[in-house]
Picture: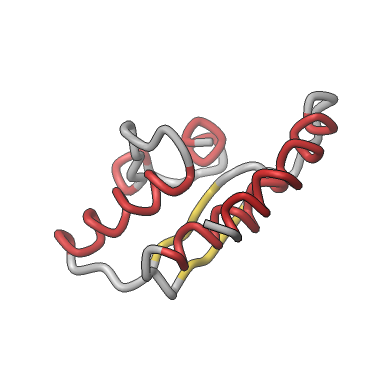
Length: 96
């Protein structure tokens, strides 16, 4: 997604990546720490369209209220599987 953003004109130096987030909840926890250290009050998550709802849920669960989202506007054949998988993953996060 970083490559996509840079391609669309977002300056490389203002994009923060979480290299240690091995799942959405870990990314939310890591982001909370980054936000505290940088005195930030909101976050914009860039991810695939099917992943936005669960990502917002994870961020809300760790106490980040101001969550904005965006996604690339393209569809790949593998997204069919990802949509199916995301349905179950969302409810797993919801019940955590």
